[in-house]
Length: 282
Ligand SMILES: C[S@@+](CC[C@H](N)C(=O)[O-])C[C@H]1O[C@@H](n2cnc3c(N)ncnc32)[C@H](O)[C@@H]1O
Image (spheres, rainbow, N blue to C red):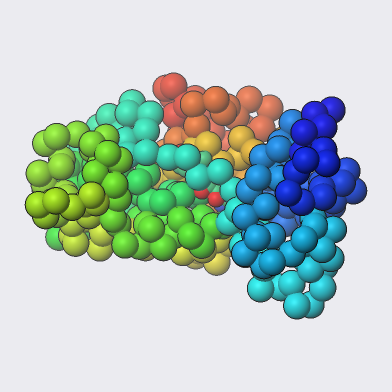
């Protein structure tokens, strides 16, 4: 066991019991499994919360979480624990594939001209906006379509960023050059940030959704991106997640998952069609 998080030279006392309590709470409420080697990570991410709340130990923080007064802190605890790494056009082959899928749908003479797409575990929205840009590329007359992208996450901080659609210029460099001209606002001289343009932002709705809780969505999705989210969950939770996604999907809908994930022994409602690309069987 790494003792660095427990050692006396730390700013806050952090006992084995405190770590166990926090990992159990997080596992039960978010699905995120925090293994023993995450001890230092838990310490450093939550130490910020202790400072903000002017608490002097993890024991005091755990006591707060269990008290009625601690209810307002639960969201901050979740926001601090989630890992939000993402970027525009991450795993670019997914967007090349999606472009072809959407062009195929657009080419059908009797298409319903209605599409529903979901970025589940969207982080700061770069995934959802990459989908939105791909959609506009595939459907030149998109205004004649009923198209919506739902972008959900458990973390309220990242959703605020997504809603604004404002990102560091270095992050926006991942948007292909031709798309930058079409789908980003012109960058003001001297600015350190840029913004996704209004038409692209209008395609995406950001909502807080804990995947472990009930899902209020009624209609079925044609496409779901759930990438690098369930990797933090245990297998039974992954099974439940993908089973529920299969139920919420149109027959022959497309599912894109993360680069180190697969559905083997997890869900047989989908067939593997490409690298981390699945299609619903019926
Ligand atoms: C590593 S990011 C992946 C972002 C994006 N899908 C991508 O691949 O670039 C994982 C996201 O899943 C979210 N997440 C973790 N547990 C969740 C849960 N139970 N419900 C909803 N979102 C969750 C985190 O807040 C985080 O933003």
